[in-house]
Amino acid sequence: MTDDAKPLGPRPRIGLVTRLFYGFGSVAYGIKDNGFRVFLLLFYSQVVRLDANLVSLAILVAMLIDCLIDPFIGEISDNLRSRWGRRHPFMYASALPASLSFLLLWNPPVGWEPWPTFFYLVAVAVLVRTFITFYEIPSSSLTSELTEDYNERSKLLGWRYFFGWWGGLTLMVVMFWVLMKDTPEHPVGQLNPDAYRNYGYVAAVIMFVSIIVSALGTHRFIPWLAKAEVRARSVGTTIRDMVGTLNNRDFKIITLVGLFTAFAQGITFSLAIFFSTYFWELDNFWTGVLVLDAYISSSLALIAAPYFSKKVGKKVAGTVLLALSVFTGFLPLILRLMGLFPDNGDMIPGWFITLDGVKEPVPQIVPWLFLDGIVRGALGITAAILITAMLADVVENSELDTGRRSEGLFFAFTSLVQKAVSGIGVFAAGYIIVVIDFPKGANPADVPESVTNNLALVYMPIIALFYGIGLVIMQAYRITRESHEATLRTLSERKALAEAAEAADIQP
Image (cartoon, rainbow, N blue to C red; front, side, top):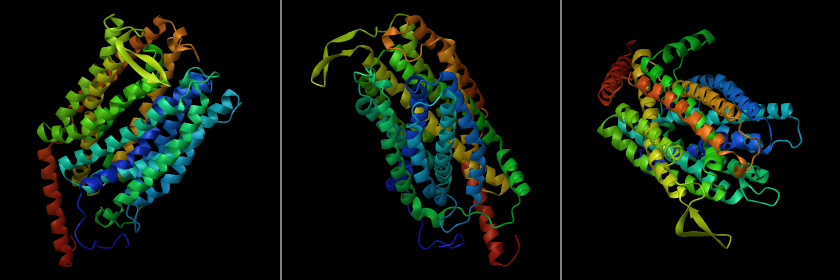
């Protein structure tokens, strides 16, 4: 079949099987995201012993370089004409290089000086992020192409977020419970270099499989997906089209929301393992236990997102849920600083768990942190699904103004902004570590309480500020279910008129 061929038979139905295949590809992105956000700063600063400032700078530089590539991938994807449509050639081609480059990230050369190690980290991080983008941008764009339904898009994105969280979290659990082994040479499992090397091998295999399976699972929809226009294109025309498309008001609103929330998320994810290891003084096993709460919260979000989308609309639900999520995440830190939370050394009387044949008591903080994680995660993931679905709804709004479908460019540019600002957030996280004089390679028991308290006191105001700005900006978004449906009717009428004119051999 060529790109101009007409589909034969009825369009395949979007049911549970399609949602599963489509969502499964996000396992690769979830693994990459968790690797960069949770482990990379700790691995290179505390295990490789590269200065935290250099690690943060390397991650920031890699993200900024990656950002320059994103819009061009989106634009090329929007205008690609092939027998496999606009999106799938990129998806298939990204699987192997994305997996291999991620493997290299966790196996840096041993014994190099700081600056060569810095440049190695920059180069490999750029490769990882670029090749993942070759999959993620086209795959994300399919949300708007597979369905125009306001609520169905929330369902598709719900499964996408579900698999992204479950994939990344499952490998995190494997990391904390299996790979991060305490040894005589490395008594703290989180600082064992072998764990990170093995993590790279396991992650590479899973990423490859998830990308290929998702591409194959959505392949049958190719004849029914939107086709690229046949028209002469110059560099000037391409740039003018991109600028005109990105000038959409509601798109700019969502982009600004993503900008401020991504900065906060970059800090949050980078410091999460620092809070677990040093603020709460949890070992790798209990850190792995707390990761399990996201299995529950992402499952709840999968159900909640379509429900809230249908009942109250995406903007209202996204605003309220995200604000509640941020506040819920602060509660344990606030209570600890006020002296109202159990101490790290307090154990639950009569509660034990057997580890390697030895009965270990259960810390009192674990059930409370686990419950907080479920609530915070369910609220936050549901909000993220709804906000991303708001971006998908911009596609038809823009098509009404420009006559072009630009899913790839929209998702690419939003990804660009979020990556750049998230990178700045990661950089800021490393700077926070330096500013509070956090000791390098320290055993958790040796870090003063004043240092860990300062970590929380600096962290919370920064996070609250940037999430708050994002939520205020989001109130200017105008697309509702009713306006979206009106846009679809207008586009349908235009298409019918164009087809009638073509049938009558009249130039529209």
